[in-house]
Image 1 (cartoon, rainbow, N blue to C red):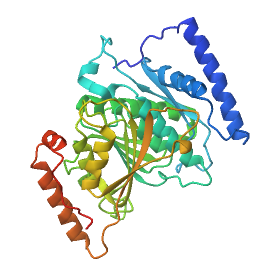
Image 2: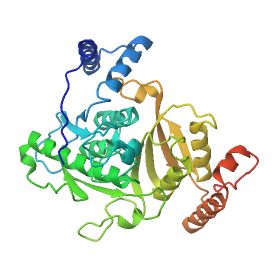
Image 3: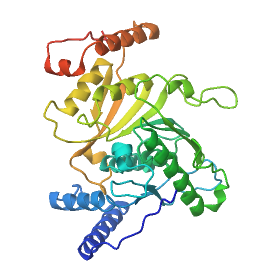
Image 4: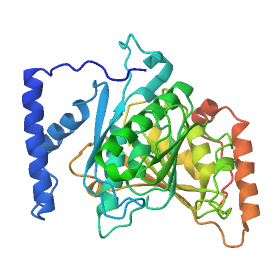
Length: 374
């Protein structure tokens, strides 16, 4: 399938705006790299202008560029951490020649701002000498991957295995195509990578020494953990033999389109005691309830703790006052409970929860589920 769309010249006013935006970003980057940045993160006007710049620049582009500074590649003898660029394809309603329209792809056909904020936060962590690169050598699950932008970024930032998952078959096909083509781009920027590139019809790809598996996964359907591959010695490829190391989800908390509970199901199912989830959440009005408060309420039912990453820890070059990064971890359980008892409690809580109508529970605030940490 031909993926490149005709390029249109931007409007002169837009060109002038983005040129000014680029100069501002370069100035901020130079100040940051020279340790001369001021203590505050710029005025509200400056942040709003910068946010408008990076959020709208490629919103309608058929091929969305992504620039990221990778960590040292495990398959190279030398450090190759210079910034690289790849593109992911977006699909819009007016793409008349597409085999799959945006209606078939739902919200997974475009790059959402929450994905950019999340991957830029992870990039900042990966290159901060005072912080841990949370993706290095880890097994990752990308929930609701869409265009695969977060999965590709995870591979470049040091992950060794990434499950790029979505519940929509056409979206998974789009993700495979994007991984395939991005891999070709990255290979062209580094000729020493060899030819470990699989066909775009395949589900597995080797991206700079990280295996990416693109597959369909319905949140909480108990299928993903069964596919954890083993190494040459028969050991599971992640540190926890039954769970995932890191879970990523970019802008998937949209209750007007998708119920929150299945996302909680997936995080609960995939999380071991040491699993960490990073989610981006864009604030949107929903008249029935607060999505943020409801997510936290449902998470607490599964013994999951939700913390918001302070805005000062996010990438200051990509400001967004309405986008948050959440860190979700398993709460410490009572030391007197063994793992079998804990799992039984979680299953019992889930079974009780699923027997009730979700919307009724939101209206009737008098139902109290048992505290599984007690």
